[in-house]
Length: 197
Image (cartoon, rainbow, N blue to C red; front, side, top):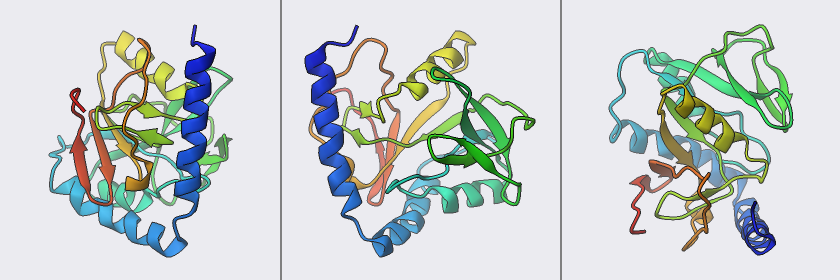
C-alpha cells in the first residue's frame, strides 16, 4: 500500500512539473515534436515490423505524432492505448488516416473492433522523470499494470518515456511495482536510464 507521505510527495511533484510544462509555448512544443525524431532514429535500431505503442497527446504533453508518422512510414506497426475500465488499458493497432474515437482520459484511438496487439516498444507519456528512469504518470497506474501484464506473458517491451527536458527532476521515490524506463526521449537527446542516476 502506498504511504500517504509518498502519495502526497508524488502529487506535489506532479503539480510542480505540470506548471513548468504548461508554461512552454505552443511554438516551442511544435519545434520539440520535430526535434525528438533525429534523436530517436540516430540512437535506436528497430527490428523490421516492430509494433510500437504511441499516444495521442493531451493537455500540454509532448506530441509524438510526427515521430509516429515516420515510424509508420518505415513499416512499423503502430498502436495506442485505450482505457477499458478503472484498472485496464489495451493497445489497439492504428494507422494514420483511420477513423479515431475517444478512448478515455481525453485521448483518441481506434474503436473497440480494432485489433489488440502487444507492443515491442512503448513510447510512454509522463508527468516527471529522473535520470534513473523512474517516472510519475497521472496517478492512475494504467501503464504500470499494462507493463506488468505484458511481463506475465513473457513480453518485455523497450520502455521509452517521451517528455520535455523541463519535466526532469532530481529524484523520484519508487515502489516495488514501479517499472523503470529504459530510455527517456527529450528535445536534447535520447537518454539511457542509469540506476546510478
